[in-house]
Length: 101
Image 1 (tube, rainbow, N blue to C red):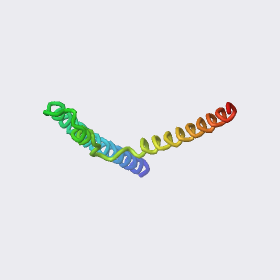
Image 2: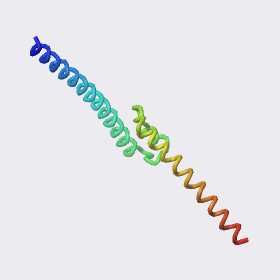
Image 3: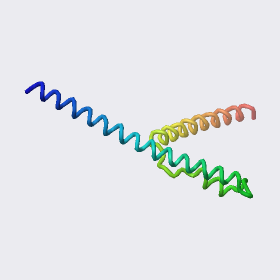
Image 4: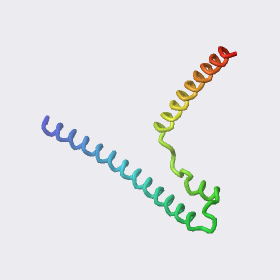
């Protein structure tokens, strides 16, 4: 019985792994289709009569899929860090300016 139970667990783990892999592949296919659509739209925009049209370019690069939450949070934290650094430089500049007066 233990051999049969262990074999069943192995098969279950393999099945779960395959399901996860199928889900990832499905997401990748969707992302690939979105990117191909964007490429076609960008090519059409470039070939268009007015390729410098800002609305056309914005529409072409508009992200149709949801952004990666990790990337968004990373960018937000980077922005906060840069804001803090900018504030520090502003304060330092003000101190230097006061000493010159």
